[in-house]
Amino acid sequence: MSEASSSFRGPRALLPLLVLSFCLPVAARAEGTPTDGGTPAPLASPEPTTAALSRDALAALEQRILGPGCEPKLLGDAARSFIEAQLLCDAHLSFILIQATLDGQPVPDTQRRLKALLADALGRARRPFNAQKGTRVAGHTLPHSVLYRGYVLLMVAGMERAGLADAESTALFDALAAQLVEALSRQLLLPSFGRTIWPCDSAPAAAGLLLHGRLRGNADSRAAGERLVARLLELADLPTGFPAKVDAKGRLVEPTQRGTTLAWTGAFLGMAAHPAARRFTATLVDGYCGHPAGSALPLAACREWPRGVKGPEDSASGPLVFGGYSLGASALAIAATRLSGEHGQWHLHLLNAAREMGIRDIVDHPGKRPLEASLHGWGTTVRPW
Image (cartoon, rainbow, N blue to C red; front, side, top):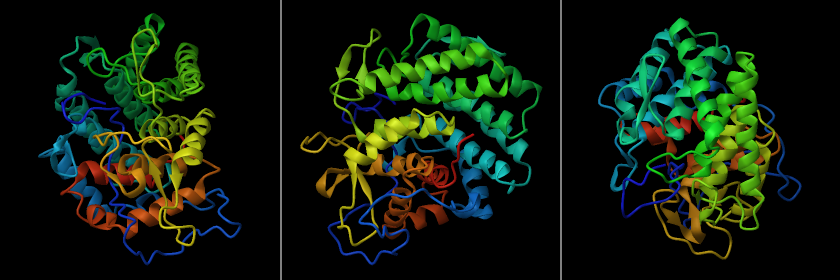
């Protein structure tokens, strides 16, 4: 999560995909409406992997991502800079393709497509991170950003998990995991950009290390991933909750717990099937999510700030809508609740809200908003690896 925009700073693990203006009447589909007063139930039958994006839409999304690329801004708004957009587009489209393979619905030429996305992530997608000193890893010069390294590690972990790895990707998987293990032995919480540390940005790296430990039988990777998760849990146990920012010694810089950071962390730990994901997702749902249109309508959204706190709107939260609901937290909660065995009802209600508020136009025309389309596609297909 970057500090590229001086006017919109914050833990940018967020992607506003929803237009949740709940002030207006909505004729929502009553899909997944609770019958017991609102008690969430597990998601019994997740929609097929390709439900969010048709094959034609996937092809259009791939062409846009690997061609012109993803705009470094959110929802086309130049005021909301998001310089890491290309990396997220590459990675999340790869996650969608990997999950399709794992679900028995592979897209033609999946391995070739994954290798092209990985090459893009190792090339132009690293530019926003190049201000940091890089290190040679398996023939590539990679920035030290924990966000960048975590994403690339997850991309090659997915190839390994789906049986689509080759000698080159496996060598990168092993070398990058070893580099992260060594870096974490010196400093357990690493920065994403410059010296600023958003603890939530360590979640992709933790997930990648846990998967490397499992898939490659590597005890060092598994242990480092567990230590990193344990540190995130320690921060979540603070009286102020899971902080947005800390310094290199773990001292609080921005202590207030936010919806986007909880959803982001819960989702990525859930990808690695780690039980700690429940802590972050449950905290998000219990403290930040609700039914802004009333309990009669199956529409859900999540706040950015704790109840009673009127925090600013920024690229992490933003924009905020009626009642302080956050487009970023609500969007990321789609993935976090899908990965949870306890919050399937919330997942359905978040999907209802996205559908009723126009996500279909983004999904049907992914070339217009590739970042948002790839994030929504990931949120509606993701499963534990």
